[in-house]
Amino acid sequence: MRVLALDIGQARVGIAVCDPAMQVASPVCVLPADQVLTHAKPFRAVLEDWEPELLVCGLPYTLSGEEGPQAASIRMQAVRIGKACGLPVEFTDERLSSREAKRILREEGLSEKQMRGKIDMIAASLFLQAWLDARP
Image (cartoon, rainbow, N blue to C red; front, top):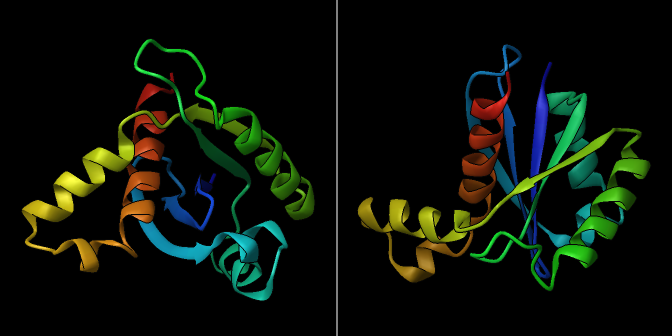
């Protein structure tokens, strides 16, 4: 089964996907949030290319393990995206995924400006991999 992960932000949505065996997560792309939320052609193209059967969306949790202030909004947006795609939606903890993505990109020698378009898809692949690894 192929799973598509969405790191939903106010401006951008990072997208990652796993292999059909559900072993390895890989970053795909970053799209403007409005294109994903309105089910625009670029997002539909991603869905057609990867043919996912499930969406996994990251939810921001606080360091104490509670849902963060943006969680309710992201939950609503994710459900809306899932309905538009006709796909079930699951949620996972995305805590610190963006920070880890920045660290990885910094180690690769990217500047802040070069990182801007990549952080969200790397973060999506990180929390998708954690979700995959936690499955029984």
